[in-house]
Amino acid sequence: MAREFIVPGQIITGSGALDMAEASIGQLGKKAMIVTDKVMIQLGNCEKVENALKNQGVDYTIYSEIVGEPTDVMIANGLKQYKEEGCDFLVALGGGSPIDSMKAIGSLVENGGSISDYMGKVIDVPMPPMVAIPTTAGTGSEATQFTIITDTEKDVKMLLKGKVLMPDLAVIDPQFTMTAPPKITAATGLDALCHAVEAYTSRKAQTLSDTFALSAVKRIFRYLAPAFHDGRNEEARIQMSVAALEAGIAFNNASVTLIHGMSRPIGALFHVAHGLSNAMLLKVCLTYALPGAYDRFAELGRAVGAASAEDSDQKASEKFLAATIALVEELETPTLEQYGIDRDTFFGVIEKMAHDAMESGSPQNTKREITQADVEKMYKELW
Ligand SMILES: [Fe+2]
Image (tube, rainbow, N blue to C red):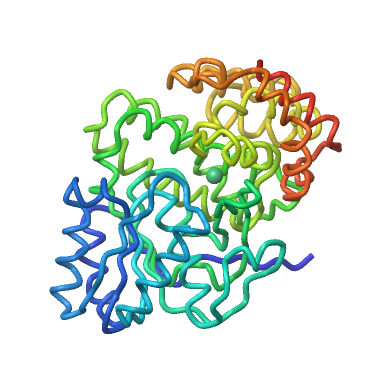
């Protein structure tokens, strides 16, 4: 079967990536809106992007109202500023939230309306040029045609999709990831691991996505723990920034599966950061998925050195699962309970969460048949 494989128009990676990207950014328009958050301004990261724009004689305005994960309200406010300031292109600097926000703002520039109008539809509208500069090694949003925005009226994390959401330019400069604290490094790195593992074991996997997924998984197993324990480990940071990009490219072309499907409702209702809720779900979800794809999980187990060629596929899969659980523990991932979520409140919304998870379509990409009842059972197993 023929398959399409989509990547950003231009990707620049490695130390000095922003410097190299400057000229390309300068050609995208006359006035940029930088979509970011306050932390990026405090850390001086935003100033580096401002300088790059100044060097190219490009005017700009900064929209730094992205707090936590993006909502329809933040998008509406961002759109307002973009129009009032007469911008003609977008630059996102930050983790997945500013990048996702940039995509959502961009999709409303020409056609107007509210981002919630696009729930369940493919976004196919004219977009301004977009530059994504990730500062965490995880979300992969710089290389995807997805954006996740919370509908604050319905308490639903909307997964919105469209080829036009793919950034024109992705700048993966490890200087920005150096500033991520250990908790963020862990959560975002495990998010990237989920992207790669889910992509590799998805029903929608394809040859080219496999290449990127496998490479990402290997890199993450080798470098995530060192980056977590020592944020100044430059080699680990560089490798993780590449791994996150690879994982983003992989899931953009193979979709995510069970973990992400179940993670979004937890994020929407309990405001657990995306990477963290994925990490909390890894064990339960992979345990469920394993019997549907022993061959694929076995390949991952052998690739990361957790299993050998002599192990049967089932054995090698189980070793991969054990190695993944060990990594999640080493990165000090809290449980829902440790995170402070009330058990009764959680159990009270399991049915809604399972419904919303299935509605997103992601769990059904898992290579094991799955029903809403299975998803409900897994939510209960988190306690
Ligand atoms: Fe993710």
